[in-house]
Length: 58
Image (tube, rainbow, N blue to C red; front, side, top):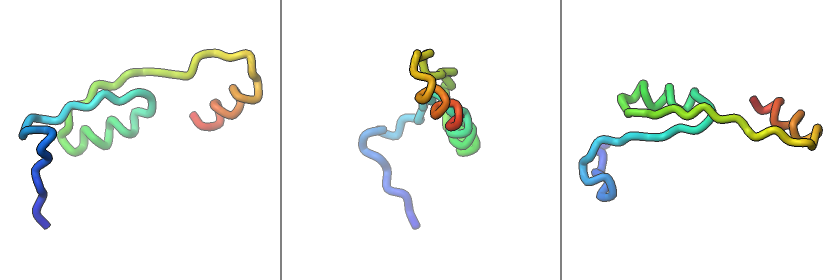
């Protein structure tokens, strides 16, 4: 299988900004992609049910 060049990249190196889950950034780094990792968590909220749900995802 041959790779077709992406005309949007114009043969420029790819650099990705990853927000949140670092596993995504690690996977890209393993493929020699430059990655900037941004540490982010959802803002605090008064809704305890929503916060519990978000906590279970992280």
